[in-house]
Length: 463
Image (tube, rainbow, N blue to C red; front, side, top):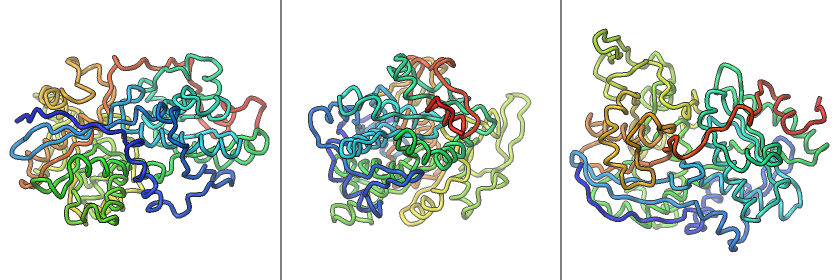
């Protein structure tokens, strides 16, 4: 590590780049008007005026750019997206925009909205934080805007206490639902089925508009601002070398959003496709699907993974063969490094494959053991970020940034990243036990079916 020691550059991605949001909506959304059909409801893409209350609400939407130094001849920069203390993840940005759009619809229509999302943890945490911020900033009343999150029971340790759990009235309005079934990913199926089966009745009987917010457009229009930020602080046209962006991914919403923003800049003539960065996807062995698809012509089959043999002396599994895109060692060939990354066969994979085919990039899978081996090294790299790594790694509860940095350094060492590239690591999430208190089981509602989700919202016996 050769440190440059330069000061970080910080911007607010919502307040400083409003034009990117509007241009991204034009690029991504066929019709930005509200959709009032139950089951398909969206509030549209209009935002409130940027008055003092709105600026207070959006004040945590900051990101910073750090020039960290060089590693084996490649310049390394960090795009720090973890600065909101209410989330410590990149989900802050789309969640604030989702809440802001809901606020504007409520003001114009007088109707109530319940945001509903399945989430491994972080999307739900960020939406709860955004709704609470909207209430506390005076943008909306608690009964007007609510949020319901549905997470796997295995993720409870990542879910946070807040005013939405401590206040009994707010807790009832904004329940945390825990899915007690076997497959974590089934939260998406249960959540979608709830909306399909109950949205019409909830609207008719209770005047509640149920907004199923897990729509990629809601995330792309927010993450497009990353491209504006990069262009204002470190334009690719002025870089000393071609650039790659490294990101730990499940479905790669963040990187697809960045590329959507980059496309907007190119169409506006302020950037060129010739200098569009490549993308390094970083995943874990539990869900390596995007790397498998990228490396194998769209095939998600785990049969494409290399075999692993148990080393009886170390107790670790070692990779068969020499494919550098997969971990050299692991505690478990099916290891879940972080339950944040739980999506199998993501529908976004073909789009990401096409972006990488056109603009360059690759993928790499990392293991917990590889992260642990690099942990002391990463503490140095991340010491100037908003989330310096703790001395005791056992307190870490979100591994996204550690995964991304581990993958980037391994990809450099293994020559996956070409020698003439510089690398920007997207620091998309890191938090520890010192940053939050986990919710108690008594502050959650167990569910296994769409009807149980409906009962958590209203108490008069739907169906």
